[in-house]
Length: 471
Image 1 (cartoon, rainbow, N blue to C red):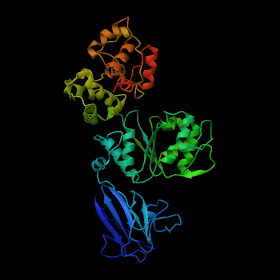
Image 2: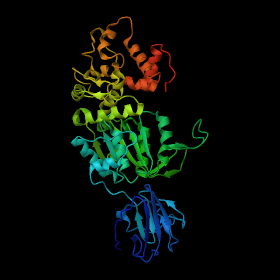
Image 3: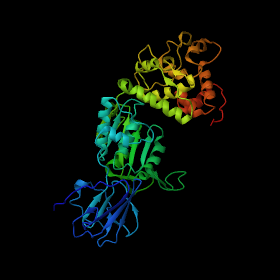
Image 4: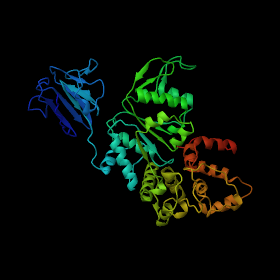
């Protein structure tokens, strides 16, 4: 049986009537549809559907079906009927049965990348796309967003994989549904399993009540699993089952629960090598590798360095309500010649630290990391101890060290600090960072370029008191 397909562009606000009569905004010329069957109320981007006491009723279809597969759809006993004359929320991507016709509200595909990015408002980041290769990757990601295909994001630490994942979610039919971010490296194996899948009461000691897992609570939305290469093999097997069966089984339960989620994963590891070495399941790799997108490091995206730097600087100063310094030409030149081993994340940290160094003046070249030795090859460098303090000067410090050490005082006095034989320079840096941040350990750790846990360990190591958090 042939079905006619047509589209109707909804207004930003107002009322849209649907039925068999030619007087409706949307006419469906089928006998199963009432003359005035239903109407859609639109206000500030919110949609509500109202059945007008139609003869054959209006139903939410119980199972998502793509518009291309509606020919064979038959009414289901589990379809939920909409109560007549009661406004009911209608989400983008939900399918509605009107008699024997089907309605699907969806967003049209963006015509250009800039249009898509303007319509996208990532919660945790900003997509500034200038580099041609990055543009190509974002365009592929936005095309993939229109389907439920799994997406694997690759790239060094800090290149912006999470921002790309947010953009894909925001451009997908699931954009109004939950977006779950989970760092697989941040949780232990036991905690990761219970958090992902949930558990039943009595499943283990301390499980006094049942808990819904994160995957189950994200039903209808998108799950972003960052650092998926860190997943334990046992959890990998269970995740594979979830992706293939679209169902989860809580810890301690024998019953599987159906879920509808879209998976985006990311890693800075070479998963093919991990598979060969037996640390990552080959079947899971093939399952998550529906579309593979690899973001280049910042050092290969020189055209984006200055726009990103200006954005981070403006955003930070506006948020903290402090004067915004200007970027001098020499600072920009230094940024363009630096390899940025920490990528976009490191650039953000440098721009957030600069206002404390210069006040209302200009950000100069000396406030930007520099290097005269090859950059570390392993992405974002960890904090290291200086091997020979007696030979370290502010003008020739290794990049990773200068980035973390040049907090307070300004770089020109670092040589004196490091030559001092009766003081611990690392202890001084930690103490100055805490003083600059009013005792706020989270902000001090960010300024030093280390984790908060590492900062706490340093406080214990140097016998420094743990101050109260600042405002």
